[in-house]
Image 1 (cartoon, helix red, strand yellow):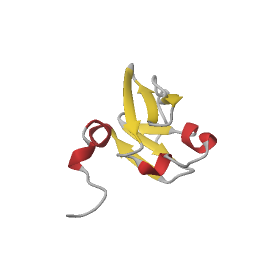
Image 2: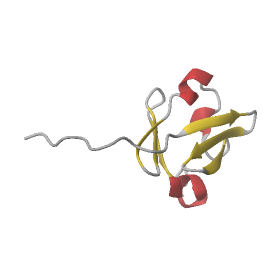
Image 3: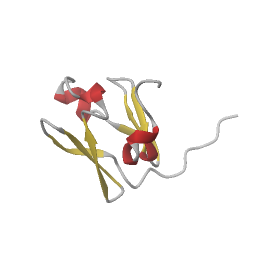
Length: 86
């Protein structure tokens, strides 16, 4: 049995700026800064792959071309999610 999809998401994630230090992500009227120090997957990625972002559910961001999944908590508090185990 398939359930119908009701409505469409009202907010769309968008990359608003990319600099030599990181990128800015806008979602639901909130802008987040993702530094390359905390999110190194984006540093050498082509712009087209950075701009291809999806928000499959509120606060969950996915870059399919880079296979990167991030949630708002990870973006707001990257120190809680170290890239290397200690």
